[in-house]
Image 1 (tube, rainbow, N blue to C red):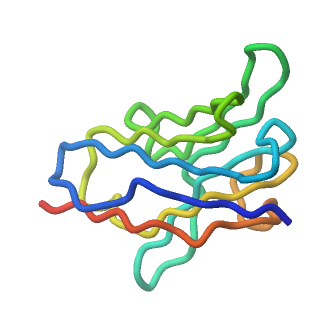
Image 2: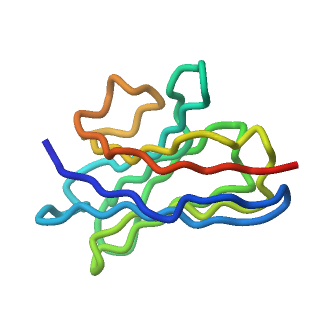
Image 3: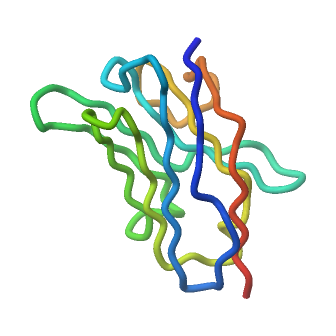
Length: 125
């Protein structure tokens, strides 16, 4: 298990931007596939994006179709954080966003063994 801490959620108008950050105190994010999921009220938790360091300055990342071109996931190995930059936000992006750690990038919650507490993102129209 990895302790994960999210930050950066909040309220933003449609078309605006937010940046979420996930920290893993005491662990190295380079050892894991790091993902972001979201859960809207009354709905299942769904995949948003994930990233895995593959050595040197190379990373592999994957995105849900609904966020491609708007969201960018990045990893800072020196700071031991994984960020999710969210641009062109729409009301449908409103959800609790969760950071997760696993061993491979898969777009399914079952592939991740550790979860943060979540951070609320609300996009107003």
